[in-house]
Amino acid sequence: MAMERFQASNTLIDLAQYIVAKKKLGFPSTYRELFELLESEGYISEDELRTFKRLVFLRNLIAHEYYRISESELLEMVNLLEKFPILLTE
Image (tube, rainbow, N blue to C red; front, side, top):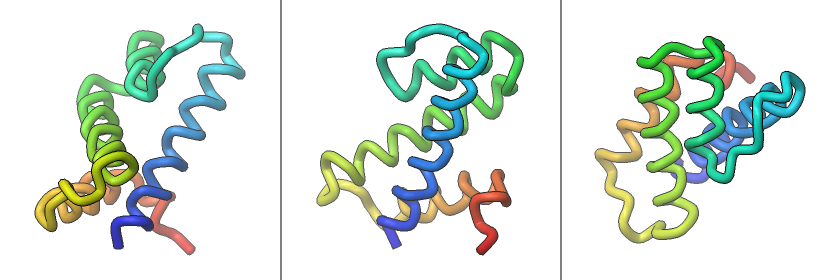
């Protein structure tokens, strides 16, 4: 289950990278900065920015400290990802 959430989060990051590059919004040095750029340019709301930042944090737990992510954090990830239904279609 964790790896599916990891992949969905990576898809959001890939989309953000594409938009930032295509629109020439800058050169972010972190995944969080990608979403900060999108928010500052009006592509996403402040609420969406908070959601994306939390997803990046949880994704990084999976990527770098897999043993630390809890079941409740995985469930939180599911709930956050449900805000983006396009990721859940097959």
